[in-house]
Image 1 (cartoon, one colour):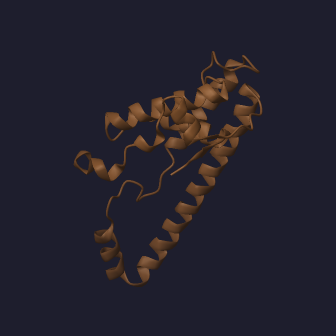
Image 2 (cartoon, one colour):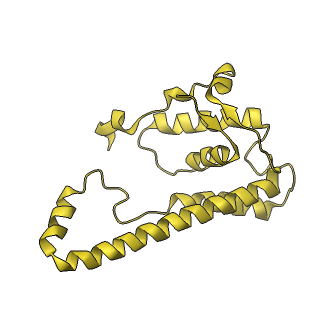
Image 3 (cartoon, helix red, strand yellow):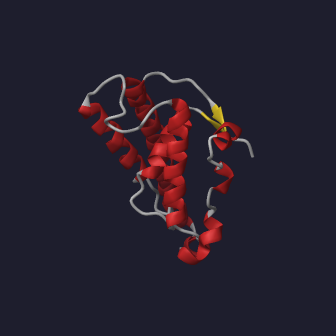
Amino acid sequence: MEKHYDRAALIQAYIETQRERYLHDDFKRFSAERLAALERPFDVRLTLQGATISANKALWMLFHATAKSYLSIRTPRSYFLEDTIVNDALDRLGDQAAVIGDHEALIGRVAETSREAHLAMLDELFKLLWGEIDAVFTSAQLRQSGFDDSREPKRWDYIDYM
């Protein structure tokens, strides 16, 4: 499938490289390779030394910290692979389950709002550090430079590592 990579995708690629833990080293390696492959055509390096507009270390620190903060956003079921047993237990509660469901829905909405705010902040910081880059690159263009995004590891292929 042909993908299109814009500034938001570049930022997301950076975020993915900031994870502290990966399901398998294949995910870590792919994330690093994807970021490097995107930095080339965008002509940027998402590092303090690579910031071209502003050498302001404080803004770089905030960019990096915001990416790390984004990765910490979660909901109570974020890491559940299967939640049937939880749903069954809630179903047995009757009316009490509705209150829990309302709270869980609110947590989900707040988490999504937080994700959106983090991405908006990262985009504004990006523009301050590297400028307003509106280029878009495709999977085909990345393949021409030696990176094949179709090789992205799939979680279900690593079920034994979960």
